[in-house]
Length: 164
Image (cartoon, rainbow, N blue to C red):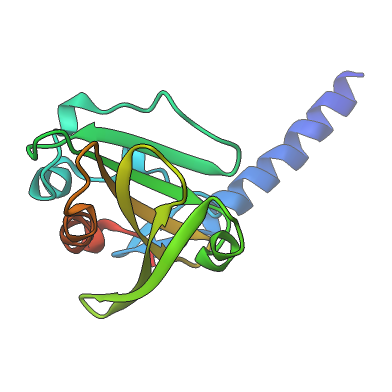
């Protein structure tokens, strides 16, 4: 039995080392192969530049195949939400929960803005495909009057810290 456990540990170790070494690039940094975690990977300076308060991070809400965090912002009633998903943006386009997809170019990187369909809260998300799935930058507010402009502005500030 002990021999089997050691063998399993060896196989698991090889798998974990392989997974750690097969990452994608974030400005020269290695990132986990299947998930980039915005909760731990976004620098405080980038969050502050985007208008968020990095010290008030909320990572209580998580979904399978997604990693996400939210921060209150300096903009009245707005929250910044940054999420990482295994699926590309195209997978969301066929989901009736999302609507109003529009092409956007932010600092030379192609993405799409979209909104949640039928949601009471107002907001807008900018999504970018990555080598492992996608990144989503959302600004939400009860007013929501300029949520897409705020999401686009936040994306511009966060883009240098996002994986490709």
